[in-house]
Image (cartoon, rainbow, N blue to C red; front, side, top):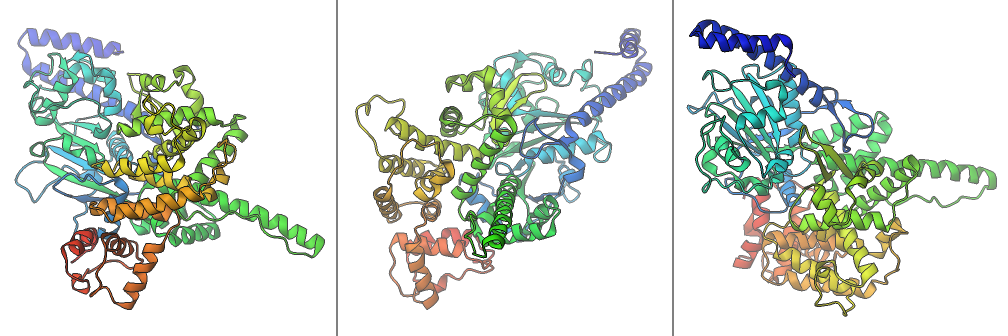
Length: 635
């Protein structure tokens, strides 16, 4: 709503233009611009000053400026789109950190003193949960608080997850801006060339628009209505507001949606360095003794320590390990009293510390279930898991992280009750209200969606004797499927994926098949599956696949799968040969070469130099060790 003063200024401006008093009109319009700018900064500051770690709108908020830690952001990146699963990309980043890379500050994204060409469009990529949206939040807040980038007149953050809901409507660019930012209504963005505007298009991977750069018509008029797809492609290409700056954030797999010739600068958010991981845990826990214990526990598992590159995973790990340590301390105190009373030592009921991803996420889910019971007096049951699990699984198959009312309804979730889910499991599923366009839903992190989807697959089989992959099919209606059938199908589906989007889902699915992991989720499963035979069959099946013609990436993931299944036979066999130095003359199978790669990639020693001369030269050797070459600093 415009103020009376602003309305009077707009009327005066109209008459001055009509009277050809352009100089006076320009002066007056400058005053109007300052009014719009002040209002925008005030509203953006209000919206972006707080952050909720891991949760949506529940619980206590924290001022972003109090907790923000600069992330490791590098200039450039792979010229080709990386289609590996993001977990593998993190492992590669872990190896290559500090290796002849140019670091860039988030506040200086558009500065290029050493280049002749101006930077108009920046694409920043990073895996899910690495801090892309928080970096955007910090950038906007610094601008709104007049700390950074004051040469920019207006900053307009436009999240794709909200724009998806305007997909069918035709509107002008000015209309779109005024819907998101009503305080800018009446603003003329094209009046002067020196008028610097920044559009932040956050979450390209969440975009459900086709973004047809080749087929869409050229559009140059900011006041003429067009489809949202036409507006965005022309804005990015520079046909609309060519003087505007564009900052796009995305997960790596979606980066190819933008033609390379539309991007002036590519940056990549790498997340936390090793030092920042420790800094995170020490900030999180004021008790120095507890912080030391948790840091030591994290470092004991190489795969968990690597995953802590992701801030969200640090939060999950901290939540789980703090809970386990608290339980241990409570049990130790209780046992100490029993010992004092009886003078006879008692066994501690301490839980094992998670060593695999499945164990970590199982502990996390169980902890959240317990929290729901205590805080909300609501019990999780199979119905809750089945509803959320179906949503997680179906949207994972479609590569979607953001869901809308129609997606929930398709899974049998009553939209009117969706807030109940986000209320009783704030750390898992969240509900967000857009600036203008309604409600969106998502899991707190992609890996949580993958874990819930894997749990759903087990529950679906448990209740229906049918694979989740065949739930829409009538072909196998009368056939009772086994756990082995489900696991084999999942292995095949994951190996068929070009970008490995089911890799982590497969790790969780296999990990949850172990009887040793199921007691943590007691009460969710109706049947106790004696999976000894299934275990033997799936381990053998994976080893057979490792001897087939797989890409190095898929092979490495299968070894991670064997790790989740606690089968280390191939790895131990290769470690023995590595220690003896006998691999230079050994004739190995594809599976054994993949085991060599896995052992080298998960070793504690950093790969400064990788010497292929130590291994018997063959095409199979070079092919299977390609991943090691890629992640070493020099080869």
